[in-house]
Amino acid sequence: MSLMAIPGTSGQEQGVIDAVTRELIKAGAPRDSIETDDAHQHSPLGGSVGNLVFKLKGTLKAPRRLLMAHLDTVPICIGCQPVRKCNRVQSGDPNTGLGADDRAGVAVVLTAALEILRQDLPHPPLTFFWPVQEEVGLHGARHAKLALLAKPKLAFNWDGGPADKLTLGATGAYRMSIEIEGLASHAGGAPELGVSAIAIAGLAIARLQQEGWHGSIHKPEGTGTSNIGFIQAGGATNVVTPKAELRCEARSHDPKFRKQIVAAIRDAFERAALEVKSATGVTGKVSIQQRLDYESFKLENHEPCVLVAESAVKLAGGQPIRAITNGGLDANWMTERGIPTVTLGCGQENVHTVSERLNIDNFEMACRVALLLATGTEA
Image 1: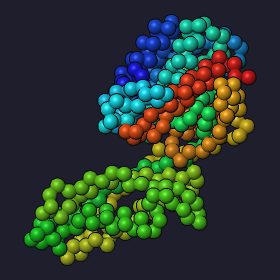
Image 2 (image 1 turned 180 degrees about the vertical axis):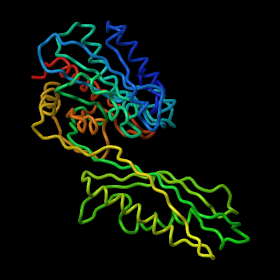
Image 3 (image 1 turned 120 degrees about the horizontal axis):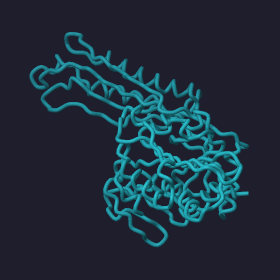
Image 4 (image 1 turned 30 degrees about the vertical axis):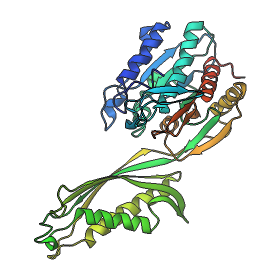
């Protein structure tokens, strides 16, 4: 409840890190076992702080295990006032989200660490990892210092969904920034001398929608999704708009087909820029920047972290369900960087909305699963 109430959107996670650190030290964690890295300095967002890492030497001779959950929430959760109603927690402010994505995950991982410290429980070597900036492109996991994580052999991530759901794979995504340059003119006196950046954007978006390259995409070559999620243009109705800025994304589990989606978006805007002309033949221009946010991945069914996680879920009273998601996870970059990572849920529902809730029964099961995995007692 206290973690969800702390403001901490992507790039502004310091308050959450301070709260987690205080709890660890209060439970007996040595200060020199708690570190942050400089991942934020490698992110296009910048930010106030990097990833938080807490390591414990093992009391059992076994491979190192990593437990992780991202610290940041989406902006809609700022001002959350968590309130418990029966077996659910929701925001007391109807205008905000709850932030259980992913403060519930942060709490699950923290609880496992605190129980081990307080009860002096036997355990294998452990790394507890709380990355920043997951919600804006998985930057914390992407830029984490791997040496600081101490080469874990089994890795477990907690994010959204029910506690018995194991996510083995996720889509990959490109993000694109599109700048359209038109030509200003008086919209009443000489509109024909202008080139409307808004008209170019509208024509391109309409073409993408009509040709099946926007939203849910199903083509003979593959499937995926795309979305134009941001448009900024214009300032007055009596001016033909000379500039527009758009941001969009393209996702697919198939890297080759994802590149086709990106190419279709680029083609639509470039064609539209040439088709919208002034009376003197001036056309618009587009500038498009794109970057890979994260690559898709799919863990093998027999991956050790998957089998171990399933054992823990069963012992905690759940029935493991294997899943693939069309969203991105920190596990995308962890797996890409050589640390296969399975993702488990902890009871979040309707995430990224004002109707977000946390199922307390699921959350408590997730805490049991995490402690089993942290102590190596899932068998």
